[in-house]
Length: 125
Image (cartoon, rainbow, N blue to C red; front, side, top):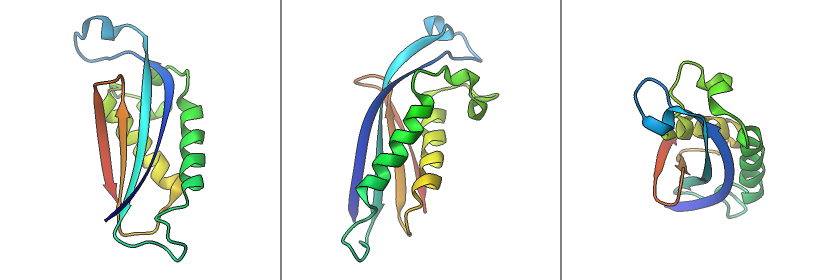
């Protein structure tokens, strides 16, 4: 199985809803890191899973949208607690649509909110 990955960092803000999360209920920022991993057993005719420049451009575009935003105010988080888990799924689905890798394979977004805490969402394509 081959894997290609790209990682970027960005800052975004949120506040948690639906429970008593202490200071997490107040708007605050995280220095996130997003890692995109694409896995397949076959390479294309050029020896790529996906051209890494395509991955970089899609990730940079997505993160520009989220950078410095308050996640709670974005339409994709309407009626959702902007948890790390929800955010990793939303980012995964957005990037999968933008990159459109040929299949079959898996597409994973691993999203850190600090140096030790992360969540991931994996989707088959």
